Amino acid sequence: MKITQDKLVYFINYVLLTVFLIIVLYPIIYIISCSFSSGDALMSGKVKLFPVAVTLQSYRAVFKYQSIWVGYRNSFIYAIVGTVISMVLTLFAAYPLSRDDFRGKKIFTVIILFTMMFSGGLIPTYLLIKNLNLMNTMWAIVLPGAVSAYNVIVARTFFDNTIPKELQEAAEMDGCSDFKFFLKIVIPLSAPIIAVLSLWVIVGLWNSYFAPMIYLDSQEKYPLQLVLRRILLLSQINLNQTSIDPEVIRKNQYLGEMLKYGTIIVSTLPLMIVYPFVQKYFVKGVMIGSVKG
Image: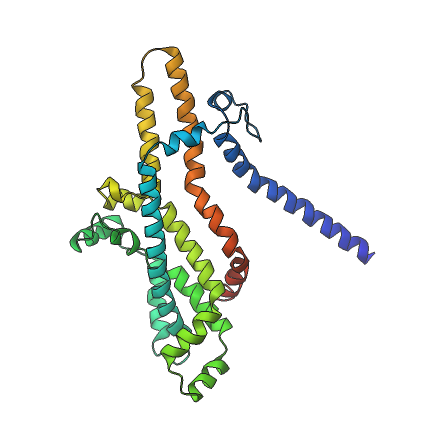
């Protein structure tokens, strides 16, 4: 009887997981299929799951803009520099909060938690960036959000649950300083949480477009998201300024529809490539770092 119940539970779990998998995968497969389909198939709604009239025209249309390579370069720079800065500041803030011998850690924890609920807002932040002469620079993108209160709390919890107090005491008996213990022992043992937090920061910086749109004036410093936004806007302007020839209008409408799906794939492809390399750390890091708050 118990074996039968177990099989029933497993069967229900597999069915539910399969349904969830289809719900998650279908939009991804659909967008990829649309990016490889012809404009006529897109406009007529023929694409359901697999590409129809396979073509690379959407990617040719996107990559014909030379500015897209500038956007890729800038996004990589912002993501790498911003992630390094964020990880250094986050880890240096989280580790002392996990130490029982750190005086005032409850006060600092409350202050950090307070920032999760209240912030200065857009206008004060803009004025601060302007007064610090960071406008139209990379630092206006990577510094304001370099430290996340949530990331600090998750990292602190990870340190608290993972780094044994006995290991710290043994290191102190051997004459190891706190800073050396942090660099030589804590950091190597924290690969899972560093990978998870780095992925969160990279995704946030890579997909960011609102802050660059506010703080950057030079198109040479635009990240990929702003470049793709500009390409889509230019295609819409071209559609509105086309001749009255029905054939030309139809081709431009097809091209505009194909550009939308091509830009989605172009912008998400780097993250899709990076994710499998950190996925093995993801579940472990999140579960350990979220046992308690």
